[in-house]
Length: 186
Image (cartoon, rainbow, N blue to C red; front, side):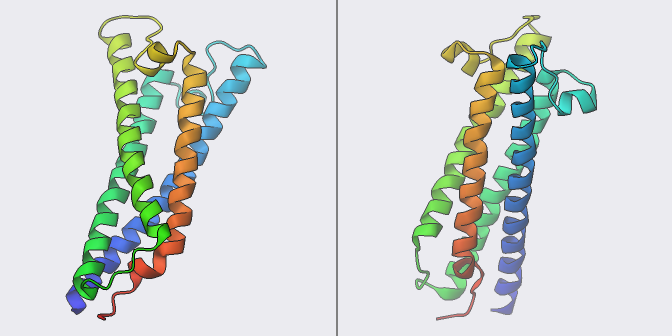
């Protein structure tokens, strides 16, 4: 039983740190899009460099592809560590794992984010392909083409949904933390 608790504890710690990283990371990512939105629609700077583009001196397409890949990896890490944490708790406690509302919200939000961010990364990958392989100067990618909206507006709203989901995961995790960290056999 002790060996199971050690592994579960490690997965639970990874889950907690990955969620905190995601919230902080997504906050800065959204700040970047808010700054771009301001630069484009208030200051009339085109194309708006935002924060990361200006600091890293790279194109919006390259920067946002890498930012979203890092974010995607954090979300996948959250999903994997949540699965391992839940499996370890179930293994130690048997069928006596209480399914709280917060735990269900946590699970649903993680699944939503994995699917949502997969589409988001695919969108940036398509933009990258359109720009650097096909030579389309302002690549519409997937979402910009579907919604017929500017890249700045689309990604502002996409990231607003992502940050809201990140905070939902954080709150749901904090509320269900006792269930996920209690490995006493029942």
